[in-house]
Amino acid sequence: MTTRTVALLSALLLANCVVPVAAQAAEQPVLAPATQAPERIILNLTADTAHEMAVTWRSAPGLAGKVQYAKATPGPDFVRSPMMLDATTDDATLAVQEDPAFRAAYHSAVLTGLEPATVYAYRVGDGTRWSEWFQFRTASERPEPFRFIYLGDMQNDVLSQASRTLRMALRMAGDSAFVIHAGDLINRHSSDREWGEWFAAGGFLYAQTPQMPTPGNHEYGRDTAARAGSSVTGQWRRQFTLPQNGPDGVPEASETHWYTDYQGLRLISIDSPQLDRNEAARGATIAWLEGILANNPNRWTVIFLHFPMFSSDPGRDNPKVRDALKPLVDKYDVDLVLQGHDHGYARGAIGPDGPVADDAGATYVVSVAGPKMYEVADLPWARKSAERTQAFQIIDVEGDRLAYKAYTASGEPLDAVTLTKP
Ligand SMILES: [Fe+2]
Image (cartoon, rainbow, N blue to C red; front, top):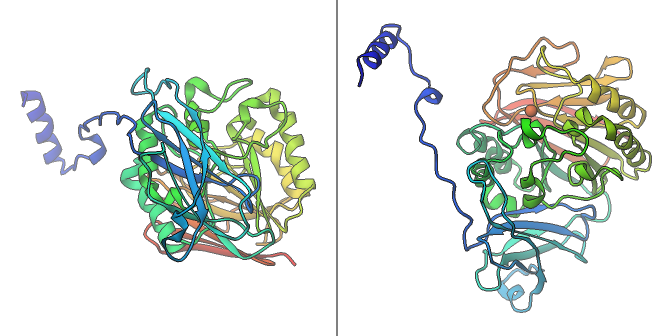
């Protein structure tokens, strides 16, 4: 220990300071290579939730990708004659932050022709090495009660501290149909180590409950900030298989702007970094959104995006996103606008002329799942706000009622509102 270090430590002790954990020298973990056994297995909903399911995973380079699947049976009989499907495999070098020559085989497959409201078992592998059998349930073709989970940014200390929020959510609502992530799943878009933390946080839960993300600014990073022609991190389309039904003529927003219908609810992902910064595509995006809001057979409509249309932090504002979306949210009676980015909690209803009573306008929420915290202002629009609170949300959709409930990461009730729509 040098004289200078001793002097510094003495000064800290004298000041009765505790050195924050984050300030302690952290050892940089080594990048884990992709494994022979399938890993990072994840389900995503497609645009046909009653008849399809997408599965994506990765393995060591050079391995094939295959899926076996069958209707689940109460006993082990389903394994006798499963259906087999070859996955699409992307086995090229993908520069990641930790290694410019990183290589892994990313496999994806869409199971089609499935029966509605049916439990299927599946496993993935290369034909020799297989995962365990996982199970999922397809959606009903009709409106039926269901629930889903909404999480704000996990982003920082994803495995160490954000995971508890996700895991508490799935402990309390393990029967959720899917989980939506409102962007900034990780902090550095090209860090394979951080994506590895994100997959470890969910583990096998991602392989049985579809995960539905929208990108945040950290899925772009500063060097690839969304603008005309630039696209989300290369990890996005390799690791997820999301609906490809975004606006025509905006290829950079494929699998980032998307929508799907689930048992009477239309779920729409808006790639808000693109909407904010890609001025050339903004018109096409607004026209696309108006089309899917105007021709919407569902009773309930949820938009989710990263940049809030109404912020919880007094120093943050996204006028371009708000100006683009707010008229359509009002015109087509969107029920919920679920957002991230501001690292605080706020919820309130806002109509065409400003804040209104619950149920008299769209309900806007900002929430954060991870441990990074920003100040929350006194907000004229919020009926409820909270600072320094990691939260998750469980949303129950049942006929003409939508029950929204927020909980803290430690499982305490934080907020609730019920919307009705005869
Ligand atoms: Fe963000």
